[in-house]
Length: 141
Image 1 (cartoon, rainbow, N blue to C red):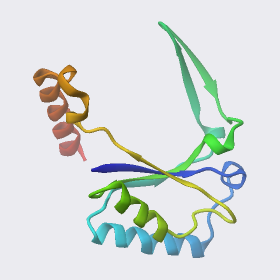
Image 2 (image 1 turned 90 degrees about the vertical axis):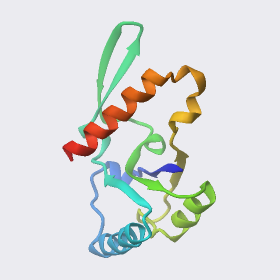
Image 3 (image 1 turned 90 degrees about the horizontal axis):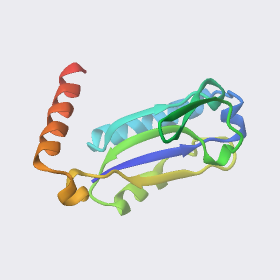
């Protein structure tokens, strides 16, 4: 099972406050544990929403909205992609994580869809296309 682990943004992270050397060291150790356990697939910190944009879809119309975005509690400051056996295992790993922000912070855990979750609508042709694209991405890394 794959899970997206999302570190929620705070006013400080949105203001561009960088993590301390101590936090970077602690996170480095935690990431090493994840790698050694075979859990970590990917992970990165994200720049504040002031450097980002959103694209709003309305039928065929596309509207670009530049950051920053007001609702800090809905923004993501970083993420991991983990491969674990269950949501319970993902929760246990998150509980071991250093606090990612000064003061209070929140980390959200969401399971990633797998091909079998889509049922009959994900036809054999679509599955073959998905496998081909994943193989192409893996080769290009």
